[in-house]
Amino acid sequence: AWLPDLSGMRILRCYLNMDRIGEYQTELHVFRDARTAAYGFAAYVRVIYSNSDDVKTSLAFRKWHVTPKKSTIIPHLKLQAAKLAINV
Image 1 (spheres, rainbow, N blue to C red):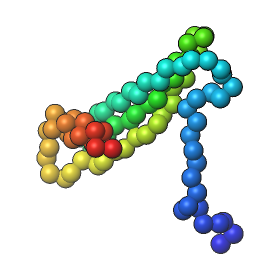
Image 2: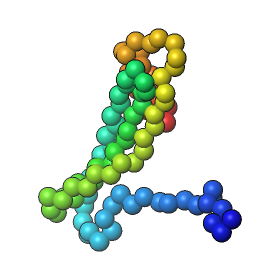
Image 3: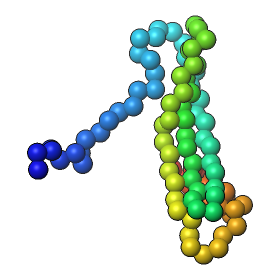
């Protein structure tokens, strides 16, 4: 009861180093996978700073689903994972 209601709390992620000045390039990399137990994807943001060799990679989003109980082949689950990544 001593904890405040945290349902409205948001934590923003910082993908850029605000101390860095100069040009930068951002890339989004999405990886998907499927197993007999689950399928899903993970998306990473990659920031490349042009005035140095500094590169920063951060997990931006991920989502997984449990595989249905009925027997499903792995290639079908990999397609489901790709569909999940596109729809999000």
